Image (tube, rainbow, N blue to C red; front, side):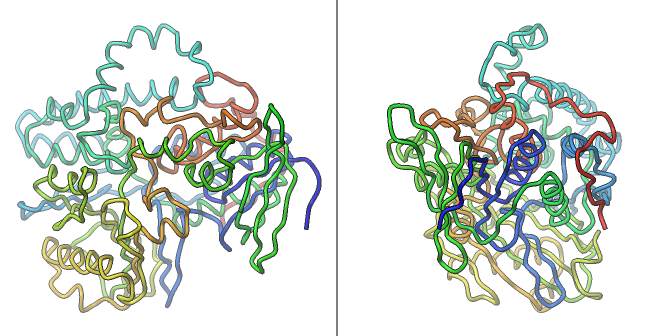
Length: 534
């Protein structure tokens, strides 16, 4: 079966695919978006059972300015689309060898006082650190995050050139060494170093350029959209449809077709429907917001691959993960909406995940999210919704998750060990006995469900060789009209980065080499009215 007509096809209905489709349609393209699953969201997925609604992906709402800007491109706003709650504390941190946890506040001044209380002089040091983080963040937004790196000429400007020495140091010095120049207390070093994990790396491999992340959580604050990140995805899907995007779910793309001859260009895609039929769509532009490794090595012939398998053999994956979704009877006042658990020996912990010989850390540093602390709609009355994210090596052979302990033995052991560790460290001795719903997700699931390279939970790690223009291009070097978006291409990992990747995509297609965000239209200048949040 063939559907004729030349137009733009977007592969993948995660946040990057939806945002890319919306922007392209706003720019005049006729767009069809193809999503493998029955629901949209990609990594930002969800699972509902027995009155619980669990989210299976992103859970931190940071960089609110990026979301605000994206919505304003369509004449709306975060305030109209989302009901945002500011978390205070932003998160709680438990340490292996310290009885009392540490709460990171919503306000910068409170965090400065906190650091001073834990280490004399650390308050002033954090003030300097956050000043540096803010300056670096502002420079990144103005010059680096919103550029496709199609041309380096726009970067040859005075505000960049005069900072070249500092920028070089921030790129070459690892984050852990940079942090050590400010504070000595190991707890404070871990608090400032842990954002590396959200970038798919470890503090000793992440460039200190990314200390800008501390501006986001310790000065900007942490928000939460009521209804969860499912509501965020729904709002962007609404925008895409309002711009005229045709969204087709249960459409698993099997191939990207190219034209024969010396000048290769995209010709279309084929996808498999839920009933097994193969449909071919003609297209003069294809945007893959799917995993870049999958796109290049599975959907294209070898002759058309810009990033073939030997390229990936030299790359570093971010961590794999075990997700543990738990419905728990009663409240857990010992925890916050976001809680982090840090082992004392980080070198050993991260070495197991990223070293040449990998293994599952035990005990592990991990993250616990309890959205029912903020959102009453995610759990029945009298129950708690919580999921755990345990970083482990990116290795699908470690297995798959399952419901009620029916996953692979290695994955269920990680879940059991982590539940026990949380119970001990947070002082909740009856935690295991109160669990009424349990589901696990492992690297095998990330590989099968999301076509994730090596079963990684995030994508390529943000090491020096995999950041900025070294991360790769968002346009194929072999196939004209083939472009990429999402966390596996520039600018990188995370929901805000995925939104920015959609904007960079539009710039690349239009030959726009500017480095800042796209101009926002005047209020009320949209083509199509958008639905507001319910």
